[in-house]
Length: 110
Image (cartoon, rainbow, N blue to C red; front, side):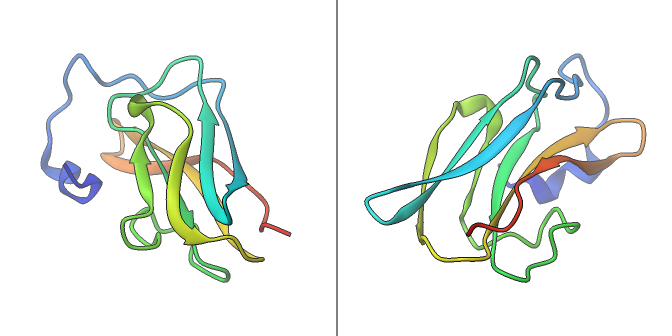
C-alpha cells in the first residue's frame, strides 16, 4: 500500500510511532541502500530517498519507487546510482495530527 492513502485511515491498535530511530545511506555495487533502525517501528513508518535539493519536508516528495516500509527490515537496496546530495528520511505516521512526521534524516550524501 502506498503511504499516500493513509490520511483517511482511522486510528487502530497498530498506531505506535517510532522511537529511538536512526537512518543512514550506504552504497553497494554503486547503488544507494537505505539503512534504518528503531526501538519501536510504527505500523505505517517508512524510509525514503530524496534527490539532491529535493523537498525533504514533503513526505511524498521522495524519488519514485525509492522507499520501503520500515517494518520490512533494513537495509533496502534502491535502484538509484550513488551520487552527491541525496538524503534519506525516516517518516512516522502521527495519529494525533493524521499526518506523517519526519523523525530523522541524513545529511546530504558526500
